[in-house]
Length: 355
Image (cartoon, rainbow, N blue to C red; front, side, top):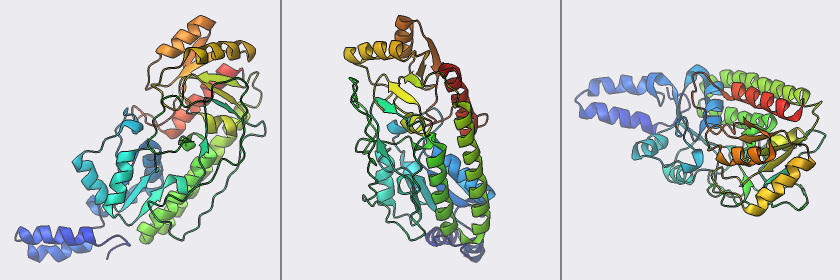
């Protein structure tokens, strides 16, 4: 029985046992091994949002390895030889192409048969330091790619920017110093929009079912449950922000463009997509004007980055500071998860925007 998984791991297990003089046990080992300890599907996920999807959809049938440890910036990830080897032995790899060059390279060289690549299930857009969301609550892009296999490593998933023109309005739209691997100017933070995140969840669920067809019904059930929770979260954000007094928020990290678009908000970022980049003097002057003009209440920084710039700007303008998490990682996966952190983000935005 191979459970729909690649047989090469089973062959290696058999060879190792034979080398130890346990040839009589090798056939039994082959019959019970499904690619991970305990017969579970071995999944390598590149960073937290994708690891979370794999865990929620795979449930008891999967063993998920998150390549990015808690508290580590995904963009800075360098894979150890051990991690590279584990990725190559995985039954399924879940990643976002262009975000982490080390992962892209490892996937390209691994020859892994089953890959769920996040950008093939939804669209990416270019976001500068200034993103205006539409008051109708964002954009519903349904990208159904079907079950016909897409080529892993295919460069051809270009969804375009779909006509979003936020205007110049005197702001600096540059991506000063942002370093998101090979994103080509695209904003990778799609998981902060529950609707787009649900699209990725559906894609991961389909690929997991291909990897392990014996448990297809369970994966479909778990996917539907997760998508339902994300739909409810989307409704909570819409309801929670419906009566906001202001729509503008300032953040040090331009990570919340998709969230701003979805819920009719206006994100102004101190710097670009890189949370560590330093803003220019012109940008700081511009933010002073915007804060007064748009009646901004709070300057947000992210939980895993320095709050120095946010506190400096807030002090100059006599504003409050707060935390918005880009959810690239969580500090303690045992006490936090995607939904708990997104609810914290919603509360923070409601307080800052007078909702």
